[in-house]
Image (cartoon, rainbow, N blue to C red; front, side, top):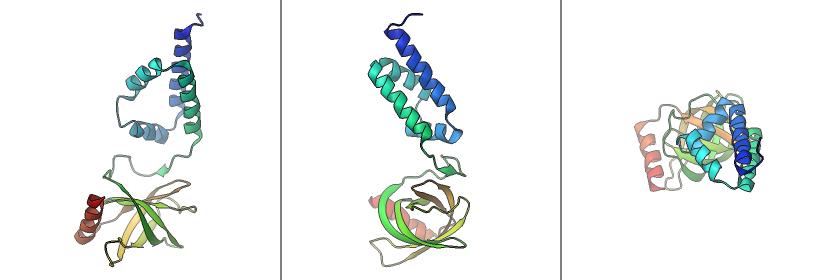
Length: 176
């Protein structure tokens, strides 16, 4: 077997595909989403072949890191409830059946929020949130469910928002 440049590129390409095969389903979905749902295999193949050997090995190292990173637990598909999310910094008080918390909403959409927390409650728990937008004195009392969590926080899907609350959130998201 030749040990020239094309052999080296083939070995790197084979290793990358092997690593992608080792990813969990959630990790694969996350990877696909992060690649903007392009034709992942053909797009990666072309890019990898065009990379220099040093860059290919750097890519392998990054994939190794990704395999060991914590991917949020999910109970919904990635496309379910996908709407525009906007970054924000909104104080929120929220409670589950057995505990109360105060943290920060880091992004919001009409479908839900991401709340930063060092102590994330379990997926599947019902949750009640109370927060207000900087543009309003009114406090929102919103029910939802924790649909995913990671070491950085929780994803909350809203339940049956009133038309007025939906409008406030859409207006807030639209202004960002």
